[in-house]
Amino acid sequence: MEKIKILVVEDEAPIQELLQFNLERNKYRVSVVDSGEEALSVACQFLPDLILLDIMLPGADGLEVCKRLKADPKTQAIPIIMLTALCEEADIVTGLELGADDYITKPFSPRVLLARVKAALRRITAAQPAISDERIVVHNISIDTARHKVEVDGEDVVLTFTEFKVLQLLAQQPGRVFTRYQIVDAVHGEDYPVTDRSVDVQIVGLRKKLGTAGKMIETVRGIGYRFKEEE
Ligand code: CA
Image: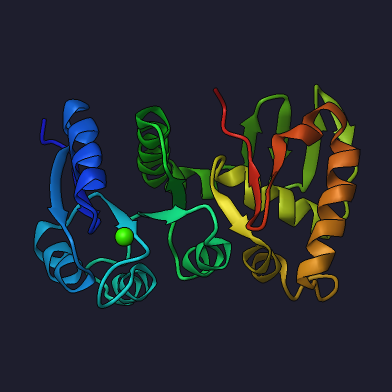
């Protein structure tokens, strides 16, 4: 079987080595570059299955690189995980809205790195059937997307249209963080206009109605929300 290819874009040598060592040990084929310009040219030839992209890079930074990769039909489908410092919340939000799939904050453990890489790769293969599936079942929640019905532990839960759309969006891709803007965008133009602050209100209502399953919707401080991944 051909190895899964990962492109690492990182300018700091110790982090490059840490990434390369751990990814190769897990049987990924790794290519490492240390600038945004190089990332763009290598991505088109190497055609990786996943890109780990540092935000703070000399020259074109990670956000610029992300934007350009997502604008190019050759590379736009490749999932991107950003590598950031914890203090770069605004950059993380921008990156997610530019189409990055996820982010990892530095310093990170190899265990977290590999879990995130696997989750992002899993989402590529899972994304297609999940959307057409009529029923999403995660943990004790069952979501019937055709009938707009939700059950928790087999009991019906009555949600508003907007609450339903928010839940559906998050539950379709467990583990993926959505920014408030992305949530607004996904549910926009339905029963009433949703603002980013009203997303917080929707989430509060949704959690309450979901009862024991409410904790599956996690707040990602400063960034947005995500549906907990199944362990
Ligand atoms: Ca850097």
